[in-house]
Picture 1 (tube, rainbow, N blue to C red):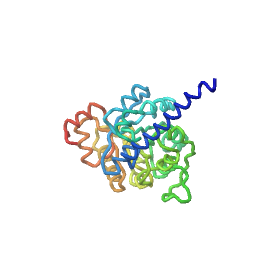
Picture 2 (picture 1 turned 60 degrees about the vertical axis):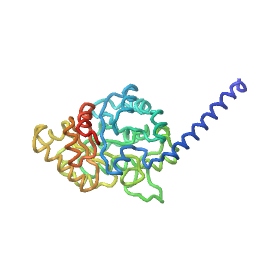
Picture 3 (picture 1 turned 30 degrees about the vertical axis):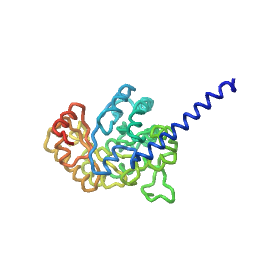
Picture 4 (picture 1 turned 180 degrees about the vertical axis):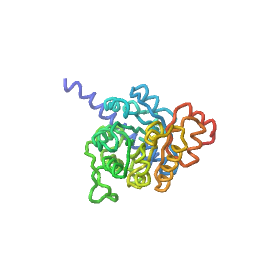
Length: 310
């Protein structure tokens, strides 16, 4: 039986070698500095736009993979902390046709996720789980102070080698990247090189996104934005921030809070994110200097109609 199956194994091995050679040739022809398409944009000063979803089905993953957006963030704060579903979704986002068309392993859409623990809870395990599955960014809920932001950053970093150009802040992430290596489509050594935080490490492909959702977080916005390794700050516009401030969601005080956070981001060259639910709002926020826009398909279509030459 072993002898009979040997030709099949040989054909599989040769096919695998051929695919490696093909991939290597394509990558050599069209190299990219960043595998994370969001960071590729941020590194050149461009904004990034995406959707939020709680649907972890394979069907939705395929839809998101080919949507004309830069990122999708998976909502796990108010829904189940479903890591099996997260794994399934990342598998569904692999688009071989797009890889062949682009000529490298960079996906068109980066995957981020937001999880249940708040910064004050100091939960650490979910970061390791998310990154080992293959995510390119983590959204940290309810960050109230720079100490909480720093812990998030450290949890996303591997402990640094003695020769590291960027040894601080020291990393805490455990090392088991096999699934992430497979999803990213690189060698383990290449993953280790790229699996660091941008802009702390200019070659990094991971993004640490802090959410400011409370009055305390607002008070500490400048200090949070100054933490090394923070790549973006997203304002909790949907409900939490206005509730913590004790005002309505359309209050001028809430808008002043947004502008305070934006000012801190701009001062520290950190991308600032906000929700925009119509095309004109997207255009206004981009003009103000926001770099991360969370929106929906209808609003995105409106904005593109307003900005055909984008």
